[in-house]
Image (tube, rainbow, N blue to C red; front, top):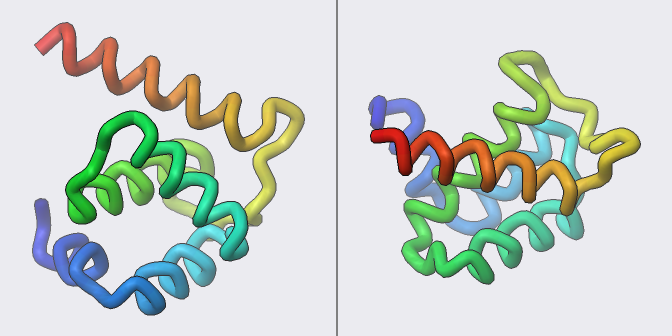
Length: 93
């Protein structure tokens, strides 16, 4: 993990949320849903969960500033597709 990403992940809850809001345009409800979704997938370690959150948001919005919108597929569907893609990649390794 690079130093800049590590600094973001280790921020307080409020600062991490604000980073996600500023970078990807999501609101607190969307953030809470994403975090709970990964927690339900047994990602209990906060640093790992935050890394998944950032990876997911980057997966959806790319490098550009996000709009906070998840389109026709919706948030949960996007989370499911992301989870399948990373678990398939992990199984290949």
